[in-house]
Length: 441
Image (tube, rainbow, N blue to C red; front, side, top):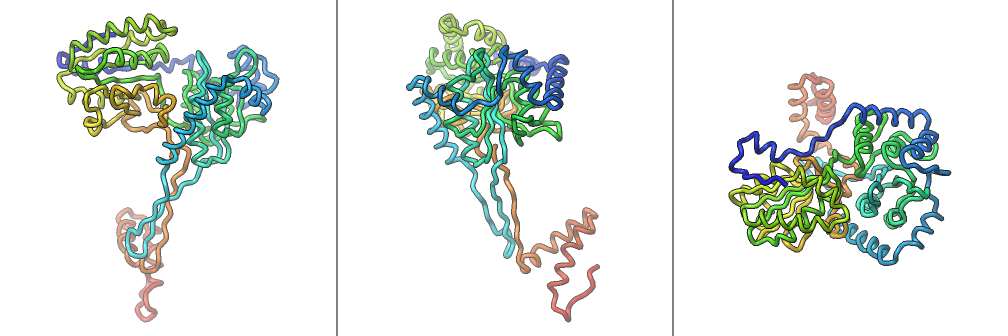
């Protein structure tokens, strides 16, 4: 990891210090995804079988996972893993149910009632990757809030293994969250199937979940197609920023940095600290711990574009963090909650030495589908609200219209929208006593 002194950098140097690994939407990737989307739209299931054979190297007899396959996966799964999946799902449900938005009703003037109600998105598509490792936790993070939101149809896609079956832990998680239909599909073709629909896969209104470059590019393309589908959020490689003071345990800090570095070679981790000694010790500890990791090669590649940044104070550390807007922010400082109000942009925050980022990935109850690549400045992590539509409602009494009608008419006239103005003034005239009525101007 590069070692940098924040106060020794000019503005260009600071921008470079916080630069993410470049995400290149290469022409061949963009065009390749376009071809897949077009093929699925034109040839439907035939294209899905062909792409699955070509990219996943498996010849499927059917695309949809049967109830019997899920039964077999459930029976074969380690009981301890099944218990952990259920336990994590329960905590995710506890938090997301408590945080779910509720209806609002308020009188903004006498006789003027304005409300907001929630309605679930009709059919949602959940994408659960299974590239270098299956991700049953992602099925939980997507499926639990979808179920709480009341989505009538939950469709889940996850790539098939070489034996033609989906990972059993993913299938069990799909059953736990109540997914209605599950398909053996991965990559851009899975996104295409859920966005446009085929004979087997129903068309979905909104798509959720992480993926590789091909799946991510497919999500971006279908989201700007009027015939496609909405998506949850922009996403990029995983990242963490740790703020640590001189009292932080170096082994804890190093472990947290490596937990994100092992996600993928394009992941990024940053340690920001006012303690030069801590930075030195953590650098050594990272080397020691990394050597023992099964995914050490992946972690080392991620570390090659990661940073150790020395700052003058914790105030300055928080300013650096807000500028970077990390997906995950860990405050490994003596009084972490005292600094929480200083956090302006982060996907998820982890307070104190005993709160590793890993618990947010799996079982604390928060969601691990979070904005990356600086999008935490303007996006939030996945929640029940992500699976709902917020609909405003208003109702006026005659007295309410008399109270706010003149204001409405004045603003409509200022914008030269005469029909808008008349829709109000006609009604105001109708409320005048018969002997006091005047023609509507």
